[in-house]
Image (tube, rainbow, N blue to C red; front, side):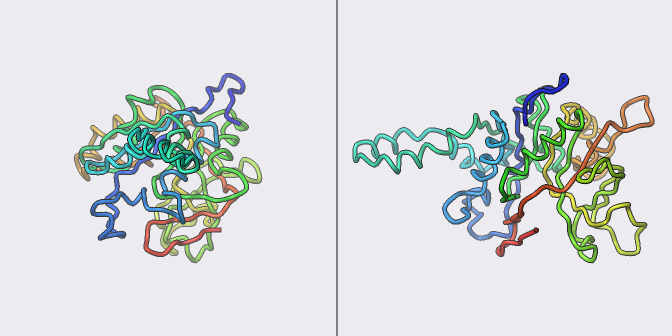
Length: 283
């Protein structure tokens, strides 16, 4: 599903913004990045990189904040511990030790100052270059029969390119807690995105679909990084001190009245949002 079709470049790069402070997990997040907290016995960040690897992603860029260097160390070889385990013939533990470093080629970059999620993704540009890439957040997990990211990449290939945003269906009464996608149908599982309405109020004008909530995972075109670069230096940053990712997704092509194709659709699987002390499940 990640192969090139009709001239499309395959998606081989992944970006994971993981620079959050993790204040909901204090006091443990004082020293342990929230992305390293385990779901049973596997850290959140490993589950996300595993989803990328299972979707054909070979190179992953994790954007971290100062003080979160443990995320980089997690995907590096630990020769000292490996030698100790080898002396004791603990092959099972050696396999567990080496599991993270075998998933993909993982690199980290540091976002020195928090200037919005768009600015965080922009830090990956020197490593991603002009390649298409997938973006998953560092605290967003989806469990299902197949990787949710692979479903988005398949939609991108099927529709001939463009950016794809993953969504989940939510009751309309709860739509005000999410970013809701408004658009026109492409097929039974896909919309052509007209807007992403952040936390719409019931009295607001209704978008055409009020039950599709943006799930914070995307397959993006490389030029989105260029557009974010313009926003990171533009009036939005001067006004708010932040560059937001959705601004890069919504900007029109220069000299035109039309947006490049952006699509959205629900994927199959249950999502875990381990951003609070209690896990919330979105069917």
